[in-house]
View (cartoon, rainbow over the protein chains, first blue to last red):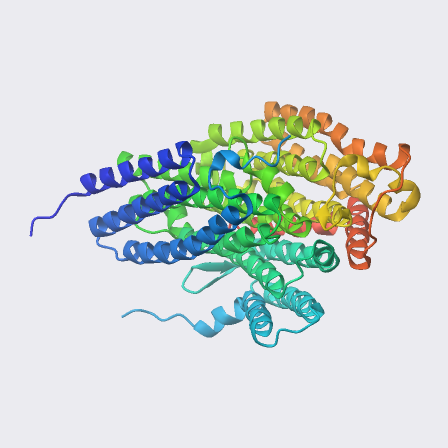
Length: 102
Length: 493
């Protein structure tokens, strides 16, 4: 079977990660920012798996599983916080999060 | 044939963490099924559990003299880890002391609070001992996820929710950055173990994997930079510290910061050692900017919680100085860096003490920590005022307090390492900082008024304990300094 080299996979991962970072930095909707963070974590997983396949060591794939588990826990708390925010403020726009200044 | 390491030893070595975990689970189960009317049992369980964990840690400390690997090298129980575990447990205990009355006053006295505090402390303890980048990440998340929830615990208060949400977004973002760095390091050296990283630095390496490690290490430093709130990754700290319930802020400012520095230190000082030179410039600027921005930012704040948030940023800068000051020859030749650990210990006490006083300032179930509320405190409650003054003087680094000793040794370590400019920047910004630590004292002692303060016996005990430790260790710091230095040297192996 023809296999893809290390570099193209890493490039995809880097693009995904950059997209995620861009989303976090520029988008104003809490849910989209949250999705962008998940995108970053998936980019990390891709990069772990790519390195793991390249080197023949399986730890990288195990790490990807760990990251997924942690991301799921984080998503549970994160979405609960978004709901809480909406109940309090009836908005999920990050621009409105300005109660504290100084 | 895979060698199966003795699990029994690992369990024994991590028994303090396991105990904390079990107590936290017990609290959750009791709250879910028994639903006791009085929540005092949770306080007692949590406090007792942490005390027992502290005692166990002392026993384990004896067992792990030179440092032992546990769970196939995922954790390393050595003096360095134990030192920070003690800091984490102390932060948890002090925060619990001020919690009970405070939660009652703001109307969120719920069982899960205590469970979450213990989970947070568990994460800090694991982070202090983590010897593998993957373990650092998992421990960090155990700690952070508990903290996100704790920050937003006052569900009806938009500030608290906003604080929890901001912390969550930036925390998750920084974890992502840090993980990406870990994946690069893994790609270059084929392992995430810190020992493997040290070995990799010692052996020769090609340019390609070298650049991967430099980029990966840089991303790791950025991730840690977020966690310890250093400039330019500090923007979240003031809002999060101000919005979170005060007892949670105390835990964040002392425990979370100590644990983050523990892992940061194990990576930079322990694993990278003198090879951290590749990131020297970045760390130097981070440290300098953090000291300047933290101290300048605090000058213009009118809310004491916000002042302390900026002060915690400034303190991250002083502590970062230690990372820059590692000279050639690695840790073994820079024992002065033990001041990092000593300062972390004193920082835990002085912050917890100051926040314990703030936790007594509530009005109609809300925090009321504006600086003018302190007016007349020196007259109405001289002991509380004295306690707060000692904590503030210690934060400012004025003798004869522990904060002075810590700052003195941190700055002299920097000077010894030839970082004269950084030490000068630090000294000037610290001198500027004295103003905002003295200002609350002027309100307390020189303005008339009757502060609306609820004297809470346990919180008052926490203040008394912290100020006593500040003064005693400020006058006779010898033992604690030796302990800090020994602990640091255990990293050098």
